[in-house]
Length: 117
Image 1: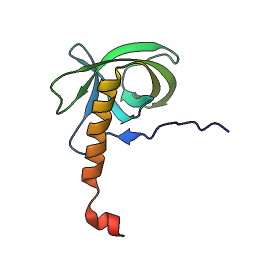
Image 2: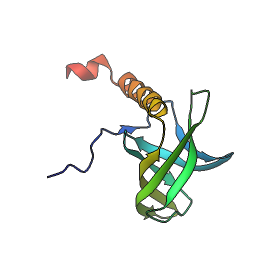
Image 3: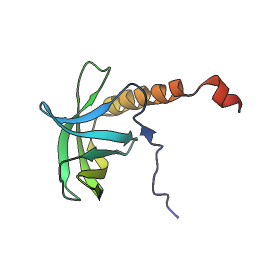
Image 4: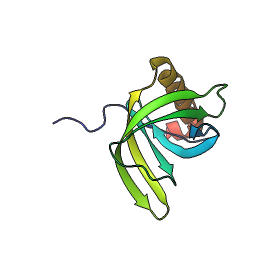
């Protein structure tokens, strides 16, 4: 049986935020990020299976990262939409930089006390 997810996901936690931008317009907020894709929340309404081009804005980075992905699923909660998407175009270097930052944020949330219990 093939596993549904092939790569671990990192939530956007701590003091760092990861936003989807179109120019200066905030499109959505990334909830989690993996090697293969991301999930995000948005007030915008996108069709499933649609390909989208945006920029990722990671707080603490000095640049935005261009990204293209395809919507795989959508769930609606009131006015908010939650999407799951698969990357169709993002450089390996950019993806690695973001994953490294999110991993470090995750590591910083783990205290040595938590590891001992």
